[in-house]
Length: 290
Image (tube, rainbow, N blue to C red; front, side, top):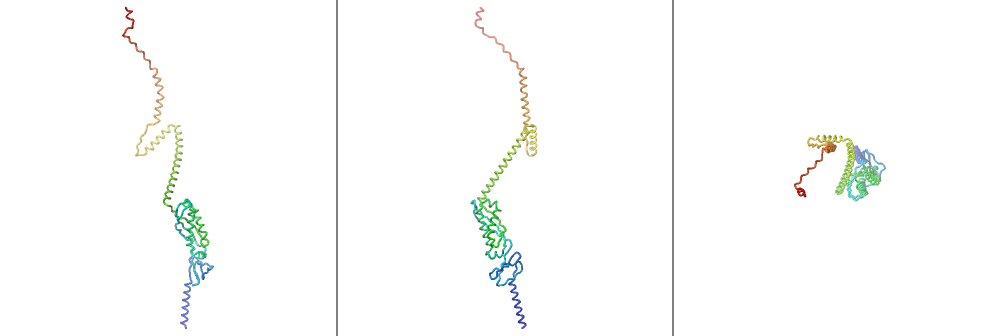
């Protein structure tokens, strides 16, 4: 009799242990447990820690409450200005209502992924190429709104959406490179022209200042000679000073009228040459002599 009682107690303990093991569940800190009892949703969502369910009756679904990073595959589309591009993005979302994430949608990750792909293709068709390249912040906000509106019903909140890369055809890349090069060349020409204009004004002022002080031009020449002579591998050929030539020219012009005035009185008119006697007698001279 005693043996039978011991055996029954052992069976009960073993059955209780098996029951406890099959009923015990552990929910992690970043998870929430949704219990379905005979297919019916229980109102209470199990928090993190140790919890028990009824084996064979209850079914526990664990939902991750962390922010999920979901890459969106590259989507090819045509922009509003008829340029074919490939755009890929990344979506950051999290579950805010575990019950809705389990009941309202079959697989909320797959649903968010498909919604992100279709929204990305729609954004590509509504945008210009310049917007995709330079105005991504606005496109990210529009893409986030397009995904977040249906995701709210699934118990999912979209944290942010970022466009990762925009792939362009090689012909478009070359065209954009030529355009950027032409724009830079134009800016360089404008800057060079402005610099020449400013330099010409400064040179005009310097020339005006040097014209008032002739010695300044000679000093400037000497400064240039000193700057050129600093290079040891160069040969300096110093030209004849222009100012000295001008000085000699002015001296020659001042002395030429005085010399002509001094030479004028010394010049005497030469006396006329004496007439030569004629070797022939004039007609009628012989008749008178007779």
